[in-house]
Image 1 (tube, one colour):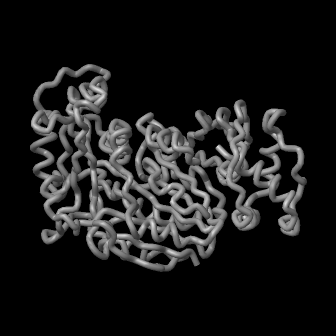
Image 2 (cartoon, chains in turn orange, red):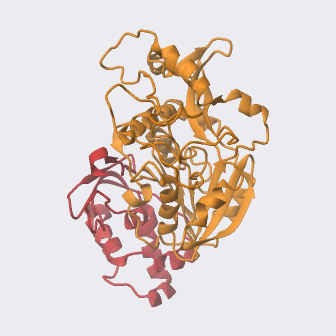
Image 3 (cartoon, rainbow over the protein chains, first blue to last red):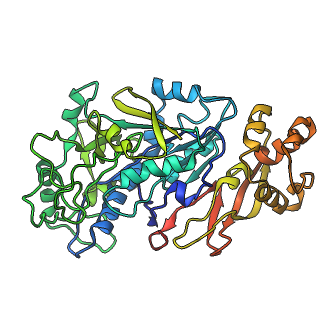
Length: 348
Length: 126
């Protein structure tokens, strides 16, 4: 939840840094971070990879979550057993920061602790507030560079919990329990180009306000077109946790290309995961604008507007490799929970 | 936004050396009862910046301004039920519904609306 840019053009703010939480976040700090990230969409103007990323992130993450917030919230109540168990195990009187709290389904899960939630999506935060939770709008993570932001995200979390405090990170796994799900996701790469880029290449009415139009993706300069979208590639997993991708040995890397070129046997890890917003729920005004600009598509069979959310999903071990380099924390636990890789760090 | 949350927030605009504590400008404050939890209060006491906490409590509009908290607090005070009650009330039962948090260094304002502080920064402030 973390690594998203406010749709309102706010810069990225490390919730913890923006909050500049005091180094010793009081209480048994435990944070869950839900980053979100965006595929790359470039535009004609030679933008720095960084701002391209911000622009695309805004669209494929923030705009989506803001657009689907009420529906997303209404369908997000099941708590993952091991996450709930982790929260239940915290000492009485702990203070828990749920960074990337979404609709706040974990807030208040342990009555003996005090929960503070934050998310970059104001509509979601408002939903939490309406349920009486203590929340604020903030971007949990800001990253100085395109690469290594996942690492920075983890460091930020460790920074704000007190010594001995715990950080639980959960992310979507490539190894989904229901493998058929993957078929419903759009792998980024060739298919992405065909459905989203070339489809939008058709002449579109260019109204100045349609800031959302999709444009072609710049070809990777010295590399053959990567199997995944080049340019400031996504690196965080938007599902319930942050993670960076493994620190692969640094080959020559085009500015902004993530971690160099994937080798052939790398499984597909970058996806658009659809969100079906039923017509009756879609505030048609908003949805129709999104459809007009190619940001969402209508699916008459299902009677729903389809928004695509960018996801990078993690392979087994990827999470462990990411946190391996963190000095002032040790791995206290790691597990697989409901198609998520999870890891608990303890600050030393 | 409770004073507990205020106690943990700071300004992080690029270049700010010490954006803590944020000056609290509370326009609208609501009082809502919260479950009294002595365990929590004792646990959290050691981690509260008392000076920032009392400063914020005293800065609230008169009808809510807190006057019964000591300038400095010692752990020994936690033995007093009366102190715990006053600590509890100021820390957890006062909600700033509307107002702003102001960076002590840059004067950058973070709005509080519907009880929710918005800490997002502009792209040039990152």
